[in-house]
Image 1 (spheres, rainbow, N blue to C red):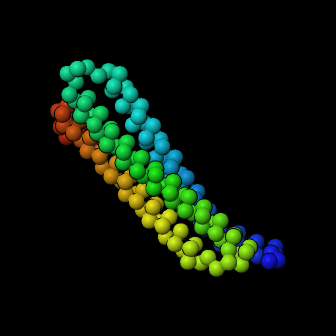
Image 2 (spheres, rainbow, N blue to C red):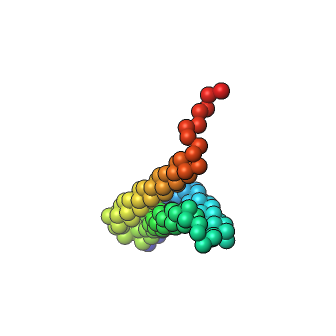
Image 3 (cartoon, one colour):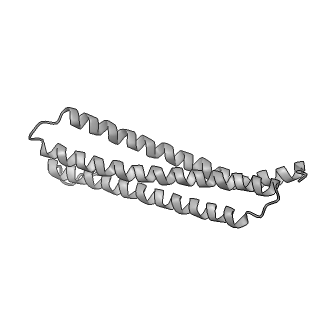
Length: 151
């Protein structure tokens, strides 16, 4: 097992794409955690001001609770994706350095990582739909009607 500098360079070149994917997943996680933080902050404000007969706040708290679960699932899948991509990178180095055939394992980790990322985006999209539906319901409840952008 004599590893040459050229071999390490080749491995680094192979790991560039997964590293870029990892960077994108990290950015996605920042967006998700920011949304979760805003949901938690809004929930705390509502709970502090909750009166015994505050039915609209109860409905909003239930929606915020549902949204937080969707975001948590999205975060979990994004983290799983990141871990699997890290395993891809590690397996690339280990397989080449120890001359072990890990192509199927690497491909499996990569595909599972992409599936996890797809799931994360699906939960994120679902959370956005719930948030948008909540805004629409609140607008209708206030009797705002249709807002025109024309002047």
